[in-house]
Each structure stands twice: as structure tokens, then as C-alpha cells.
Image 1: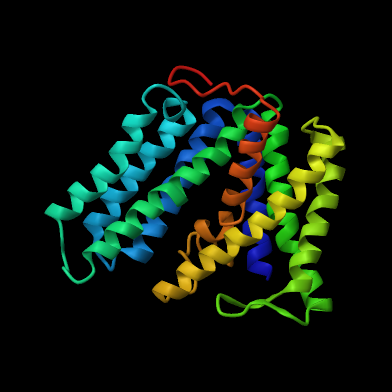
Image 2: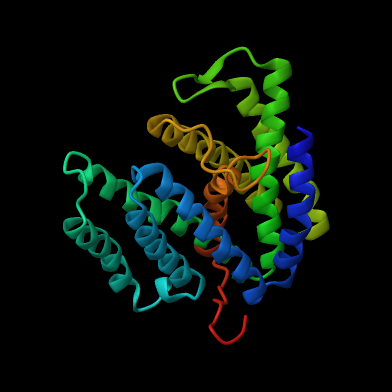
Length: 276
């Protein structure tokens, strides 16, 4: 626990500083985090094939960059959608490796590009909304608040298993407690750092985002159990891999982004390669 706390205290100020700076300061942090998450995902799923790990990490990195710069939201979007399956399939048809597993490895690579790269890219795009800093804080509060609240609620009140096959320790009581705690925190933080959204919308977004964050955590647990690993990596002492730390956040972030742009119809100011 001490190692976890020290690691978090070292990393958190840097993350918050770059988040506050915005533009390519934050963009640089995000693409670095995306590269690490993609590398961890591909390492878990590619059966020791280092060439595939590097190639699929690179493709996922390009997808993330296309999202952050708005290319994925413009006229080039259909081409980008085509590039992902084409790139993955062309790579594996000429780099098959073990024929018994090549189809599953190709499928996992495509999933990882959209999961570790695409969802993290959309989460980062929250910073490009009006009051974008506040939107990102909201995503962090919902992800971390749900996780922490769920831990303590489950520890003190947990009796009924939530999804034992995937995550044996999680309980329904912990899950509900996490959603309630995250929602309460969201209202508290709205008054301090924003974003300035009406109460009715926050009442919808907060519990929805918190619940989906828990599903993101369960989804990564499912992946790790399937491939037989405990952590996605070891980059963060006491925490495991970076993908382990953002598994909930990258489900919360896109949920908020969709709500903000589709329901609230907020505009997006995408990053450019010249200035942020």
C-alpha cells in the first residue's frame, strides 16, 4: 500500500499539471500514455511475437492521433475506419506465426487498437470541449470515485457477488456504493472545477459514467483472466500496468464525450499539429 501511495503521489501532480496546460502539453501526455497502454495490451495478447506487438502498437498510436486531431471526425473518417482492419489483416496474412492462433491474435489486435487506443483518444478529446479541463476532472472523479467508493462499500457491506467468474471480490453492495459515492463527488467537484452543466444532466451522466467505469474494470479483468496474467504491466510500482489504471477511465470518458456532443451539442476544438 505504501508503494502504491508513493507512486500515485509522484505521478498525480505531473498528470494534473499537463491536464491543466491543455493543448499539446496534455496531448503529449496522452499519446505517451496511449503508446504504453497499447504496448501492454499487445504484449498480453500476442503470444510473445515482438514484431506484432510493435506493429500493432504503432497502428493503434496512429488511430489515437487521428482522434485527437479531429481526423477521425472529418471527411477522412471512412478511410480511417478502413485502414484499421486492412492494416491488421494485411500484417497477419504475411506474418502468420502459429497458424492455430493467428486469427485470434489478429482479432485481439484489432480489439486492442480500438480499446486501448481509440477509447483513450476519445477520453482525451474531452479536453477539447468548452470547459474541457472540468470535463476531464469529472471523468477522473467518476472513475476513481466509483473504484474507491466501491472498495470501501464492498469491504464493509458486501455480501452478494457481482460477477464472480470475472472478478471474485466484487459485490453488488460495493458496486452500488461506488456509483453513489462517485455521483456525490461529481456534484461536489462541479462546484469547484466544473463543468457547468445543469443538475438534471449531471444526474444522468454521473451514475451512468460511474457504472460504465465499473464495467470497464470488469472487462479488463476478463481479458487478464483469459490470457493468464495478473497485471497488464509493471510500469507503475504497486499499481501494475498503466492499462490497469485507466481501464475504468476509458469507459467513463467516451460516455461523457458522447453525452456532451450528442445530447448537450457542445462543439469540439480539435488539436492541430501547429498549436493546441
